Image 1: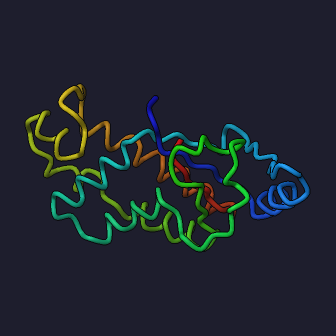
Image 2 (image 1 turned 90 degrees about the horizontal axis):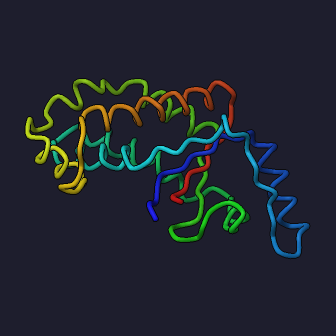
Image 3 (image 1 turned 45 degrees about the horizontal axis):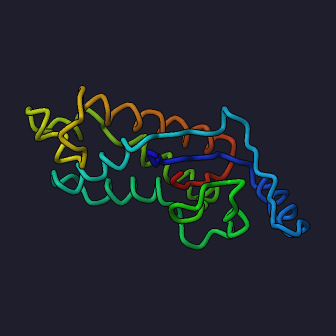
Length: 172
């Protein structure tokens, strides 16, 4: 079973309805069902990018921004989403990024120059994959494997910020 990074962008009032549903339900069912267009499965590419940032000497703020992007904030009130209707319970429960945090992250992601960030990857595919935490079985273009989820996450957060919405993150 492969675990991957998941994102959901939701309106604050949607979270309020889910919270109320969980409180009203004997089994805590939050009735979590965001539309497919507001969900993103980013695989493990962003985590590989974080490892690359740490190993390459990229600006520390870049790694911290990416970590917050996938890890959420610790103070979000989403304990009601700690339910098997939302995620499989294998990793940490979902965490929240509120509208202000989402706007800050979207701005930070837009400022990342992906080409410059990935320019110092080793030329050897095996070395580049190892630097990013991918095993020797990794095949393909490591730059594309890292750039694609960055672009997807950037667009996802940008849209959430434009709407004034929250982002919920978890590993499933």
